[in-house]
Image (cartoon, rainbow, N blue to C red; front, side, top):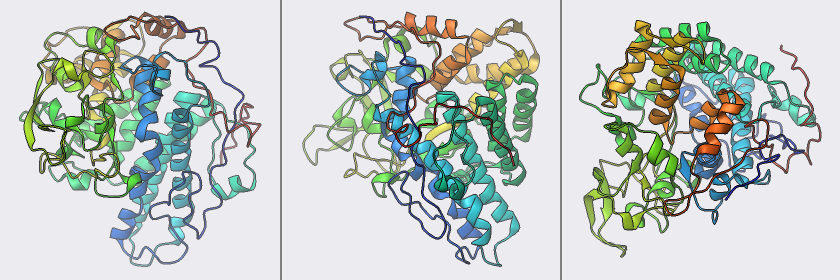
Length: 536
């Protein structure tokens, strides 16, 4: 079955929703419908470095909830062909690309990004006036650096999905006039670079060790890593190489299972107890013991059967046939940690013996074909952590869809190493045998149990990125970096069906950009207009 993609990926006449009313002494957060966590108020509320250090906690979780709960995976790994769902659920509309600009996955993701921007703007404007005399300049600057980092990350997400978007730097100005045009992608990228340079200069440096609790917030090294990625997306290869090399030379981050941490493994990345490990550059932070907006229920979405979850449903998404059959080389240790095939055994997964209330829990799970998700013949494993079993897992909140405290990786050191290799290659053609490029590239392969390569091409790096980062939201953006004809050919060649029926799509659009959320042009009819941004 083929689907016509005409206008699906093209810009549609939709608009930009009102972000947020004026942030001043109020902690209202109309934009994301939940209260901001610690939105600053005028006065000496933050009277210690510790309070300032904790002030930005909400920027790592709460503001991303609407996107993380479902939309993030729909608009990234499902649409890219890494994940699959049948048409009966909302994810299925991103499998066959029958979604429209009214999709809540699109609006939820848009809202989360601009909610994070609005909150970051509020801190940047108000925090300097909201600290007491005992707060050190270093702590204040670090908090402001975090806000600039989060704002940059938000815009990086937006510009890769929608292209031209409005740059909003001041909530007060925007609240007076929210009927504004979008700004061109080159200005958005310049804004992102400026924010990350500020973050690099103001964030604290870290030496990430085994005290994972101290690693939750980003560092100057995190900002350098993200800036390397931003440069790579713009094909600023020399700058990307320089920034990635600085991160590598710092020694701040390490591969779990690499030469520096040989007793660890790729599998250890996806245990709750290893949140904020040495490889984590930036991750959304969740808690399984808080309220509805505080937790991560990826376990519920991904786990192939109900005996693995703390609620009554599971398996909303499955690995695609393309991911199952065309991504992992023989012997790649990442495969079993990315998706389950019949007979795969997971020693750290706890499941219930039956679906009866109070059924005993069993440690050590073997996947059976009768529990396949979405008729895929498989089940997702990455981010599946099973039933609550302390201390292997953290605490869960069964009342709120089995929410857990498993982090959501937004960038890992393995990706930085692949960015470094690609930046040294310096194009999407040709090959390199540069020793530094090979060292970074092969470190990732060695951790996966694969043979080193003596010469690498862009396609080698592209394939390695997909295998390493599958189901973490990056493949769709990688497709967007390709010449459109190449991306189109890749997407159309994928089997978008299940193991019983092969399906394909036909793309007639001219780009992979998503449509703006449909309910926004009503509020801002200028969204589809484009005007240069006036930098201060």
